[in-house]
Image (cartoon, rainbow, N blue to C red; front, side, top):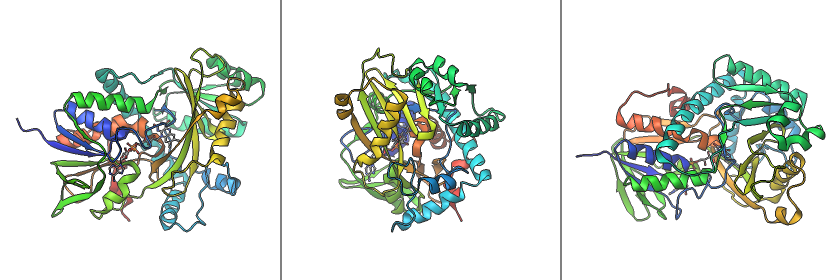
Length: 430
Ligand SMILES: Cc1cc2nc3c(=O)[nH]c(=O)nc-3n(C[C@H](O)[C@H](O)[C@H](O)COP(=O)(O)OP(=O)(O)OC[C@H]3O[C@@H](n4cnc5c(N)ncnc54)[C@H](O)[C@@H]3O)c2cc1C
């Protein structure tokens, strides 16, 4: 029997989830990645949040004011250095700033929340079918606000999307935050919590373990992984994309899915497609911790004013955050890690001594960010045979299962489970 041959470029969480979903649907699938295994770039050590109700674009109406406040601060959560010689950043930055207008923010946030909810349903089905162990903790996510002003702002935002049934949030006062998450007792006493928003549908886990587990299941279904193979470009026959060229020759397929994270931009350009992606660098630290230490949180937390997320693993706490615009520079700048560590020690004082802090595993990754927030999904304009599945920015794990389902349904010619117009590359056409 003839099975469609799909070529997936990229073995991060997005590419691997897509490969598995397509293989489950009966396609013959090949995955190519330059690295020796799956999840070795941005999906390697992220914040670990699966955040259906927390999904929001980073282009918000308060960004322009915050950028002024944070200007010149080495440890600021977000710095947009438009003064640097980086034309790609200027183009992207201006589009980003124009998406901070309130009406654009609301439309982009609704699009992200719809995809995040769709993705959550798909994730449940996928995780149940694949039976992969990834330290999944489905107990909800708690967003904390350190000031009454930021709390009020977040509550207004949540109420707006609750009216459209897009979030499942509960507002908590400071004492309720500490009841829900006892490890916050010390922060409560020190007056660090003005209030919180609890999202019942959030969860945490280890995205890299998830990706590796799904890759294993995909391989068992017959997916061929070709690691250590850099992709040079897309191969075209007229307008049709018929595969990819690699350092070891051509790989041809009926459909090619571009899921190279930040690598998508240069490979798309070989077929004349301009993807408005910028690598927004983030950091995580993973601190070894005993599994029964009650001073550490059990549930995932977003420390909103510091823009740091915390996730508990069996024997570690992960903290992640910061947004640095430094092109493709992947070096670790310790001035960016110190504020994350500082946030951990303020919120959860006590568990980590100097030796544990010194031994923390520091990591950096490049978020493939669109200027408006939603990823770029679907057929590439006027280029049959090519499907885009990239630009997931700070939410790639949260959105991976839904994005994979949409791509599989496009390839299979089925009706989509979601209006996909807000994710199309067409939205960037002038
Ligand atoms: C600090 C930080 C915290 C985060 N926290 C969260 C979180 O809590 N929740 C969440 O949902 N998301 C989070 N994210 C975002 C999430 O990690 C990303 O959106 C996601 O990993 C992107 O996955 P991807 O598969 O698109 O890209 P990647 O994981 O980067 O995979 C792309 C793959 O393509 C390969 N590749 C690239 N170019 C080529 C080429 N030319 N040839 C061959 N192979 C190539 C790479 O080797 C890589 O394996 C966070 C990100 C960061 C940086």
